[in-house]
Image: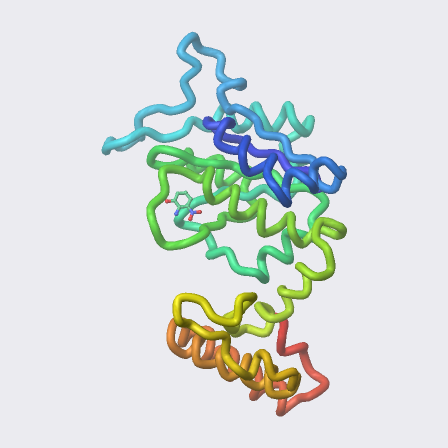
Length: 246
Ligand code: JBK
């Protein structure tokens, strides 16, 4: 997948793009991520990317012109741009369904806002999607872009081994994960549950399912309600949609 990012803080992406999963994916040619400094498309001596809002008010707004010039130069024409996403708190909440949809794109362009936002005409003319990673206040879209990139990249063919991809199945099941243990069998007076050491695979599966249900009920009743609805629908219509698909 080809990935372009437009930001006024290109340095923000250096660590995440080089590290671990993403770094390996890039080395192997599975992702081609390019981070562009929006200031490259400024023409004044101060290289200013922002300006005061029309109508007044506090803060500054990112100017439209550098975005339009950047997209024209990168793709030759505004209409030749790939799937373009603005990371913004007013966007649609990112979930695994949207992540999977984006992973099927050949290329993406991510626009990161700062200050009070980006001139609305950038949204109107360039954004195919506005995406938020959650209801909290960030300094800008950079951290959100990193989250999106990591979530999408790990779904690209060849990026992850089979052992890691298998863990997706349980999330797609719609419940939170059951607890995990490794050696030693006891530490700090805390023992590994006996059933996990019993060798009884049926009992292990049943225990894990109970734990996942209990945990989901406790912290994410919203997820549990959706899981129950999907399971009921699947029982009504066994040949219908795969209930695991979020
Ligand atoms: C937030 O994607 N977001 O969630 C996001 C982007 C930019 C600023 C923000 O405060 N939440």
